[in-house]
Length: 113
Length: 155
Ligand SMILES: [Zn+2]
Ligand SMILES: [Zn+2]
Image (cartoon, rainbow over all chains, first blue to last red):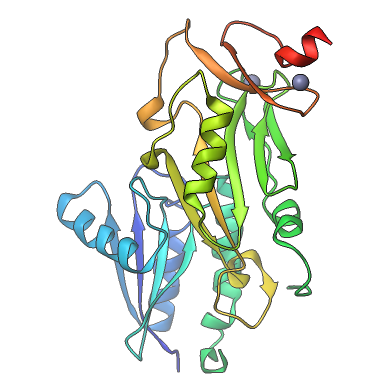
């Protein structure tokens, strides 16, 4: 059974690093695992507060922080920042998401970590 | 999965995994990766030598030091502010490396020219360029086409 309880993604609707590169594959993975999925749009005032809290508390915080940022909420209650978008180019963000989805976090044996 | 050894340095990982070519917003050409000094600073530079982005690589976010570097590079064109710097942690799992650690492999700090706060469409403005000899940054009006810094032009 997956150690992951939920997947959280901070994003913007206009950002190609977020859509379709990150949000859609992470959402599909959450559905596949049967875990909760939350996305926070930084341009939506209510969701932006939650996004700021997540990034400030657990992620790559800067005044004008990078998006997307992906967080895994584990069954033990911990929240792990696992990915930030790559300013070097969308192809690197895409590679990062693909690698993350192939990583031990998603192979059903995260207890080994 | 690429197996890497612990002695592989941050600089080598940056060169192997984080080097991209991007479209230059100044001339529309291709801005490729170049490195400054020991390689802990990377730049996106086009053939006309316009600097699209300055990237710092390290084991920690040393934003103060990075801002100092950027400020020196862009001196005379603009002032850098904390809000102009963005940061990212890179881990084994997103780089595709086999390493048994949850700790970040490296941290990146980014400064982007003509972005957000400093964005300007002023054709009479100045920009930050990097000498074709790779020795220093220089400032010139965006419509000029010098590819060398002042020192290299006179020597
Ligand atoms: Zn250019
Ligand atoms: Zn020079």
